[in-house]
Length: 111
Image (cartoon, rainbow, N blue to C red; front, side):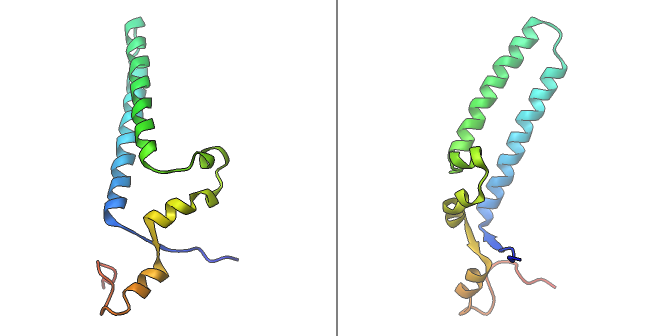
């Protein structure tokens, strides 16, 4: 059985990921709210316009993530290798980089 790898992620990358998840949740939640409030044709047209705009926003966000289109189609984790290399540092490599320090930078060791 292969042991799962552990990674270190930059704080800014992590916070950006959370912010993007919150943004997408807000868009989806707003669409659901608007769909639940449809009373007439004007409400339906508003929902359609909003959905189109939110789709554009989602596409713009996706374009910045560097996720290969192949991954969308096949879901093969191997297709994420370049993205992982750019955004993640394997935990073992992180500790090797910190060998000269008393301890790794950041709040890694708390009692």
